Amino acid sequence: MVVSLDLLINAIVAGVLLGGFYAAVTVGITISFGMLDIANIAQPAFILFGSYAAYIVNSSFGLDPILIGFIMTPVFFVIGMAIYRLYHHAFETRGQQSIQGLAFFFGLLFVGEVSLILIFGVDYRFVEAPYIGPSLHFGMFDLPLRMLVPFVVSLVMIGLLQLYLTRSFIGRAILAVSQDRVALQLMAANPTTIKQIAYGISTATCALAGTFLIIIQPVEPSIGRDYIGRIFAICVLGGMTSLPGMVAAAILIGVVESITATFYGPSWSPAVAFGFLLITLAWRPSGLLGRT
Image (cartoon, rainbow, N blue to C red; front, side, top):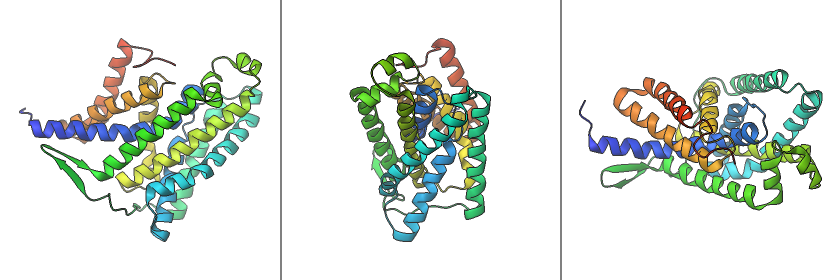
């Protein structure tokens, strides 16, 4: 097969932009699963809740979808804190967070999807914004703004979150809560409160990523299932707790998927991406940058 240089460059650029979006949707699972040891498979539901919140406000008032996402972030932060409090009392205090807790999050995912179907049906929904249609052209490659804008905002969000986790007391407590609970208590920090705050942040970032999703493509209630395996894979490949590692893993997966879809067809891209994951983990079990 003859590979066109223009096609290859555009596939790589598209993969990098796609990887930025993958990083945004994986932030939440990196916090909940990597840092808190909570296997929250309901994260895709909150991504879609963010998408549909952006759709409702955008169609009603014409506000920019990303602005809507940031406005709704405190709401989803509070919702996330409430969900963790319920999860803590129902499962963690009884030591039942392994199987029963997993079933709890599966139930949240199912109820969330069914609720969206009952309210909005199965039709695809989309938003309107000035940057959804146009593209920037630079020589041999194009930059669609519907991918570029979420990519830039995703990196800014992740960068600010990384600064918060590494420079603030609560942020460092979040990084430590699943590693040394006793030491955290000796520092006068309540592990349950820290985990509640962290889970609120996890849920809020998922909802913000949902606004990126509906900018990139129209959404329908079941589309979240496509991201369950991918976000866990990126989290593990990035080193579980490392946000920089997660970004690197997301971009690698995005580039691999984009090149595969371009030259071999979209149906091959998930298989090749997960094969790449397995090969990388066989070479480096701790992930690209290891656990922080």
